[in-house]
Length: 426
Image (cartoon, rainbow, N blue to C red; front, side, top):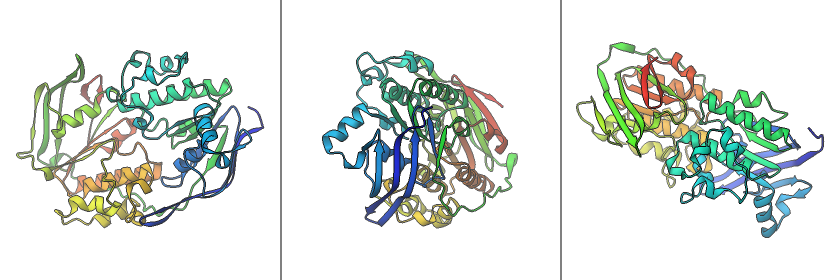
């Protein structure tokens, strides 16, 4: 790795003036990014990792300080030079995988003419080049966004949480591709919570800030003794002749914290949509709840579904008007109390995810379905999420969590694995 830095970050700060006041996203960061290597940006959720990456990629400008890439000051570029830099000098992969694609184009149509397809093959996506974003799973989208960045052949690749939505096998394929690219001279700046990515870093920029996180509380749950709240037998769901869910059967009782563990693309999200009644199975039955009033079932989707025009507190208060439970208590427990007056666009992706969890919990619904609740969380914040879910189960809610994290099994009263749409008891 060359000792000559590709990028210099000199006392860079970023503040945003919003309807709720001034938000300080980044404060006086000094760092250098070595060439032909991996620089990892770490820090708790909300510490400014995504902001720093957007600045480096020329998608935003600093409020103070200087950013230089290849000896050129990004924040001094005119509009034409900045567009050329974003086209030819840098590839940027946003944290929300779907944001990296034009919905009307296939993966192949996103590629420059003559672009190499090695990364798509290495990441198991060579058979998906004719697919559009809506036809891919969350994990496939994340891998495809990374592969597209590699295929552009630029010297600087800026990636926000590339393994957050991936199971370990898929994540290791991404890490392997990253290592190959750095050996060929590419420079990466990657924001991550993933210890396996951090383990191969050549350089680290730590943005850790003091954040008011309460210790996680592990409530004692009622376990196996509650009534059956959700049951499914022989569920089948196919798309285009491919089984997304095949002969799936589960049972979740009141007071249980249950998990379904599976790789990206294994059918977890499809199964959760079936169980919540947002999609109809091709075969099989779903029962348990004697009624399906909207308040009986709460759902945390992977894309959160927050209302952008409402503040954090107002988003949680939407269902809370029908509940005796305090939304403010939930926000405090998820380390969101200081953000209650901000809008979703003014907080990090990880913080948005915790707001979605708080909004789902506030009703105290009989059934709670949660899809990948910790995919964008640092370790400390993930513990807060699991503690909140454990509390809900202790209060009698039947909680079912879909996740790619194998370690989640140890937190659960009951666990299943899903692979190729087939569900088996762990």
